[in-house]
Length: 408
Image 1 (cartoon, helix red, strand yellow):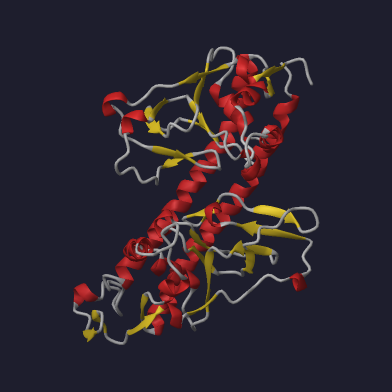
Image 2: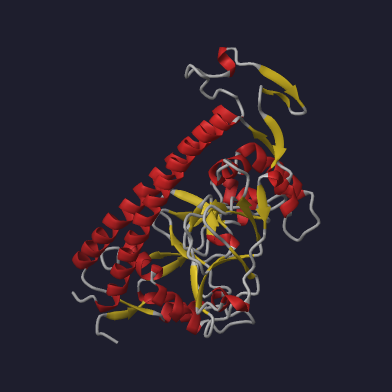
């Protein structure tokens, strides 16, 4: 252990400020990926005055189930000045920011090595909780405050580029959704003169779904896809697999893709579905959480949880991007969530058939071709930006790994 290593507990203090008088309204949750997220908890009948207030530059963490999850959820509040969070989470802050920067401490918490150490020390209860005292006894290097500022600045340059790229990806996908709505919901696709079809007198005909453009057909998603057709078996003879669980992808953004050694690691029993290029994966639990995506050039050993419905596009000229935009538009998500809430499952859930019976308006071939060109270019560009972000995240990991050897 280097001489500049010190216990975390020397530099932090617990805070327990309750929401008396309901002064704070914004409720946050804490994710296993060490981020604050909008809470999805059912708070009907809950005494919100008992919730804890967390303020900017304070931390929230969960010391429960650390060994089971192999991670310690902990996050630093930066985006808002104040919020409330479950009373189950310890809230703490740095005592003296001229000795330890909160951002530097958060960098340390982000390291995979920190999670491994926390997991090793998590011995409480059946699921392996980390006692607060044991957390405080974990150590980290404390260089000079000047050096901490330098480290944080270098790290933030990379992180800010990742954030900018994420915004670009979001803009590309939002633009695709806007075009989808204009063409396939409002029927304002370009006519032969390049003008919006319906607004310029394009011929409409009656259908079971109301008026649709002449030449279009009413189908369902099940007519255009195969569902859950590829299964991972021992015959595949992979040495490792890349495993994606339902909580590890949100709105087409993969957050935690695990690489597991089939000879060493414990493979989740739900890791059974193989996936291919342009497969659509959609979590059947709580559709409103948006655990879905369209996969671009996954590795041959990529396996996803059986908690996903895996849809493989098979209809001629119908691209996966179009089907993905159809299934994930807000109107269909609301319908799917309503069906989930009527289920008798422990968690609000749908089944694959709910996805397959979504109505799908099949346009004429020339519209399909134009749509494919546009949507494919949007999603392919987003995929290229994601690849850049992957390289940037590797750079981030390298910077984090160097923290252990930092000297003044």
